[in-house]
Length: 132
Image 1 (spheres, rainbow, N blue to C red):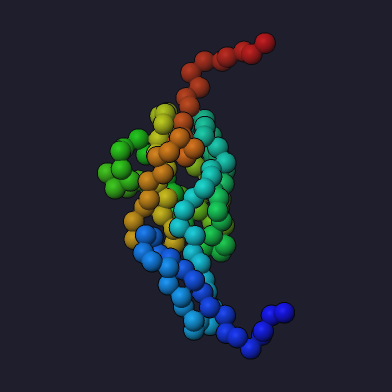
Image 2 (spheres, rainbow, N blue to C red):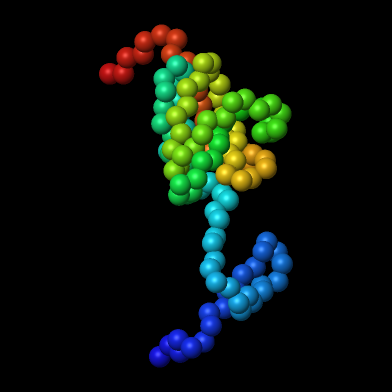
């Protein structure tokens, strides 16, 4: 049986610190600060493409862009707004292996996602290719 007279307690660990017990709280709001997946790894140059990011920050507006630079702060192009996990990107020139730079609403800086699952290729169509 559960004793409803006992106040709930939150056990939480920040990074590598020791786990703490937080006995008095009214509400807990966990803010996800990491992207786990992207819906595509290839975009055709000149074609607007909807990209979905997971997890979705409900109701928030984040920002994202891909860059060929080694770091997100090397230059800051105009980022696209990510609303409820969705953003539309259009590239004017091709590039391969671009790093995703993502900034959650309220965050001061972009986070670079340079693992293979987040890299993007913007492909130029230079001639027709026929698949048989």
